[in-house]
Amino acid sequence: MRIGLIGAGAGAGAGAVGQSVGALLVVCGWCRELMVASGSQTSARGLVTDLEDMAEATGSPMRVTVTTPQAMGACDAIVLSPRAPFTNRARTNVRMAGLIANGPLIVQLARLLHGYTGVAVMVTNPVDVLARTFAERSGCEQVVGIGTATDTARYRLTLARHLGVPVGAIRGHVIGEHGDGAVICASTTTVHGQPVTVPVQRMRDELAARPRRNSEGIGRTRLGPAGAVLDALAHTLGILDGLTEVSVRQDARVWLGMPVHYTSGTPALRPPSLDYSETAQLAAATEKLHTAYARLTEEI
Image (cartoon, rainbow, N blue to C red; front, side, top):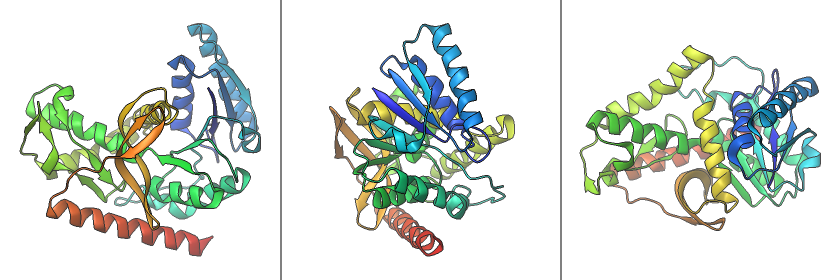
């Protein structure tokens, strides 16, 4: 597999997640070439040098090169993780606060990669809106975002600790927006196959608190989303079969997070059953994301 990674350096290409994705690809065993592009050639070369050292230290056969987005047309997949140099001071809708700053970067990449036929994995926030933006402006038919995969992982981990059970015993999803409009699917969550009462507000509070702790402690959330990117790549490229959460097109109006089952890289949507409250929350998230897309379209 040949993977492209855009936005993994410093400055305008600030990519804490992208750098972590590069490290995971070095050791995953199935990526044979990684092509890196960033807003700064200096930062791209620095990351490539570091990844080359890691590959040698771990015995990885992966080849790492510096390139440009335009040269990534032959890649099997491209990870899109650029971030504009802005200070996010939002206390609510934190991810949505990057809409106007990050949107133009994605529009520019969509132009450079117009007609791309591989898999595009969107990391940049607001991921649901920007996945739609890239898909519609590039013409790429295989675009996914990684937002609710991280939310679902955090939900299962938090609920398992609350109930004192192994994480593997939990079956449950977080869908919708990767942000304040996330929908915890409590009505279909099970433990060891049995229904369970979920303290939804406690779970929602922890979903919001975990990324804040990351930012306060290490400057930026990076490893959890990077793991979600690797999982998305493995499923969309047919390396793994099974269920995962990705942001995908639901209809002509919106992209949002939903469970998708992949078989040899072929997706099949698996939306969970929702109760009345969850249905209303998903409808609100859908409208919110559509409104944000319309705002971005007006701005650019």
